[in-house]
Image (cartoon, rainbow, N blue to C red; front, side):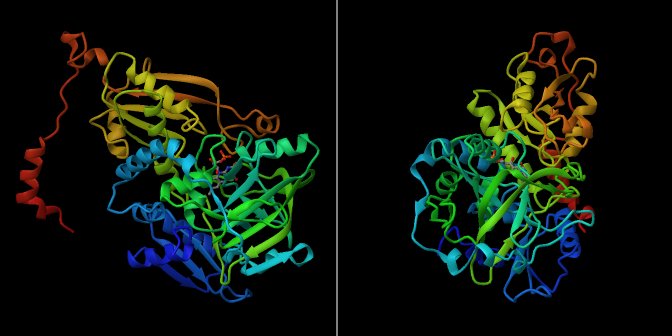
Length: 488
Ligand SMILES: Cc1cc2nc3c(=O)[nH]c(=O)nc-3n(C[C@H](O)[C@H](O)[C@H](O)COP(=O)(O)O)c2cc1C
């Protein structure tokens, strides 16, 4: 039994009541509609089987990390967690992974289940795989949503795994979208600058841990396979693909490989995106001609379509952004950080909320600016809010109360311009995007009691009013005696 085998993971999900199997669901829109409704309810993992017109055995999985139970299972964590506890546990692990990852390099093996079925060149036929059209306005079938792509740096052999969406164009061509600044685009350009095609492997079905690691910000020159190894304590067994030589997990479910050329372009999109809009529209991207296709017997495509929020990827984004930013703030030496959260309805990126125990004048600004601009928190972040430690950043009612009562709008909001964003940001006009202008502004909001008005501050005449809140003891007494009033 391997920790990287998706089928073992499915058994685990079944044992904790977090797997729902569905049969004969239409691939066009209906399957996507079910995924949307499941995500809205932070539902279980879904396994779709038996698609009309496709060979039996081909399956599609979704909802891999929609709630704390399924996400903890993917990460191999035991116990029950709240959202913040899960993010905190991961933040601690991230701190350790920075050093331990070096001890877990991927392990090349000769063979693996992924090679149970192999097709090359003209025999490649992507139409064998049931690929959904997720949303009604999508421009086509998206084979890569819960995927990751493998690129190897031609200069130093560094292997990067990144989750970038992949649209199926025909029998053996796909088009993908890699945002500028993402590692896949940086490596691809290096090949093209040398006048060479860029080799790429698409892992479109595998244990969701790989998708998770490919979709979150891991520092440049750190190999995601090492991260998975350090996290599970087991090196990742990989096989070398015949055409590109790229390493992919030996127990992956479905893998495609091929080459991207700078002059072979396609139209990509529209696609229902993580912002909840078709923001990217139709853009010129690059074809990848698939020359090798591999899958296990009865393979599973891993889907994680974005779309209306909360969507199939927003919970994992919220948890991972919170964990990454918390770990980054601690690594940067920022004191007093209690918790970080990025609400799902902000696509787990656009809004960051950090709670702190204020320790000095200016502390709140320091935290909010670093959180909103650091590599782990900057991308697509628009609002970095800092709150006091009596506020739970994952509780929007409490956050809005802090915004309503601890912010003086004329002084507590800082605006920074020309910051890291994305061509998928709906507020950036289409012409600006076409001209490569993909930066956007950010607001830092100090929703904290001004430091000088805290008891430990200097202005004793202007101490901030006391909060009206029943003591823990009072609340416990009331609930014990009268809790039945609110029982459903
Ligand atoms: C479901 C899903 C789809 C994504 N699609 C894309 C995409 O199409 N293009 C892209 O550049 N980033 C996409 N991302 C975000 C990247 O995977 C993420 O920023 C990752 O950290 C990039 O890896 P890299 O820094 O190694 O390039 C997606 C993430 C998820 C979870």
